[in-house]
Length: 347
Ligand code: PEP
Ligand code: MN
Image (cartoon, rainbow, N blue to C red):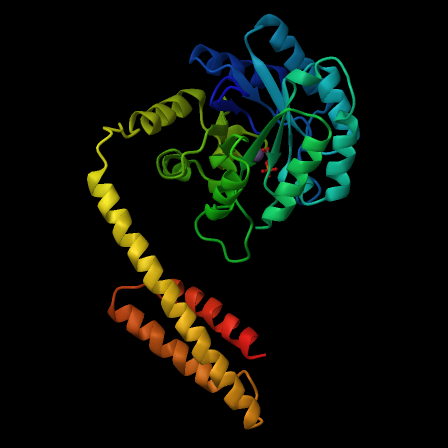
């Protein structure tokens, strides 16, 4: 992770007071962390909450950096005013927040501030959070706008997606979206933000484990507060610095050691490749039959979509799936895609 010089950015959701911010930074620094976050302007979904201290918080960040030159600081920016001010106060990184990523006008205005030649540009890191809606194009678009401004140090942040039906998490991880981004932009490091995904400190460790061990993320941006229960924003998801260290040490100590012998894995992968080919040929066969059914329906003046047939087909396949230990939603999702393509081809 050479862009960031570390794999962990930690710090409070919001900068609340000189004492709270300095105490949190001191505790983190004593534990070995050097890259700190702090919310300066807080995007609040509903009015009436704490909206950040603005420029005053930036002054404290600058003051802390002067006392401890090894430390780096970052905050969220959502418009041109905030971006200019963050740069003026010498922040090492800024991030475009999730809500802002949804708005190409706002992202372009921020990118326009960054354009051209200016002192310190080559060192500034710009991080782009995914939008709350599961739309990879908006995320990519924001990254491209920043790239087009000539910024070289770009980092993506995965903070999960706000869905109508949520599970125990505040934001659903939908891991395949950040994975797709990773495949398309292998040169852009991706940090996971387990705080905003989980919304609850009890689930942070499991998210971190997934991010490191299953999906090979480059690191974390994670919320930490000297007194989490009293935090003015996101109290439930913040960790005390010492708890953060215990948690992250545990996550990283579980890192599997690659012994280089992958014969068993190769065999399993061969099996998967064979099954994938069979699936593909079956899909081809199915579509060809679908086409014939489409022609038959046309000849007999029948509508393409037959609700009764579709409902019974889906019920049968879900029940069969259950008998074979396959989760109902898994089967349903797959057959909905298959059926959608059949309808499309019949039309
Ligand atoms: C934050 O990181 O403090 C924040 C507001 O995050 P997000 O934009 O992901 O909601
Ligand atoms: Mn927060």
